[in-house]
Image (cartoon, rainbow, N blue to C red; front, side, top):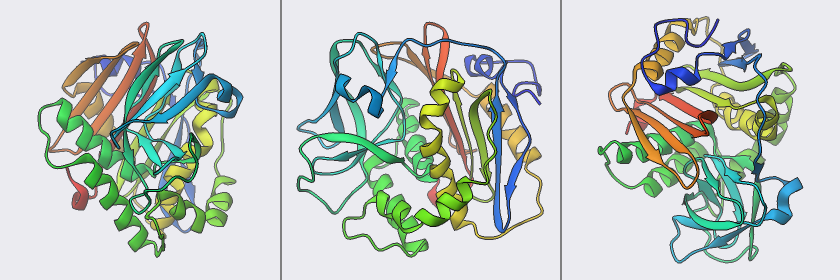
Length: 318
């Protein structure tokens, strides 16, 4: 099924959903969740770098005077992609990127971040490094809802408070004890379960994204420009969903199609706000009533990364 075969297109986001299509639904024994690979037969090339070990000599991440920002220095001759939800370990507190953004070649910019380790304010290392995890998906979605409410002039409360609260609530529900309130401690406790579940996920050669539904919690969609870029993030992305799946240790007989179709229609018809970036532009959607939000980073009219969520857990409505 193509992602856009429900209705004629209506906004810019719907154009990005025109060509990719869903593969078969994957389920997990004893867990209530649906994983659906997103595929594309279109070949697209890229000319930028990402935060990974192969490029570690080409970027530096520095603290600023503000906890909610980092200075990113790009030492390469190509743009550097920072992905929404990426965790940066080190310095006085681990941080998470609040949105996807490009750092132009041979330049430095400040990016918006949130702290994901409330109880530490002492140097672990002087420099930041790429974390082995991404922000667990539901918490990232609550952050994105709040972040986009600001862009759509409907802000309420503090993004940072929402991030800390979501981490604390998850650790309490999952029985995680963390001296510093670090989101990484949640992943560490369930490392074996995460590894076992990861082996059950079936990938496809032309996969460019992933749609996940955890009933009662969220529907999440990530879509990348091509398989190469998806592959750079897939392991951390899978874990960010699997840690949510572990919390849903039960199996229901419900079908996800109706809720997924409704989610996709909201993305295709939602009101967009366009934000110009240092490089490229961002199309964001925010619907307070449905608790659906999305962000699409576009460069030279090509979608680089789209992330979207439908928050079904009204305890964390924003």
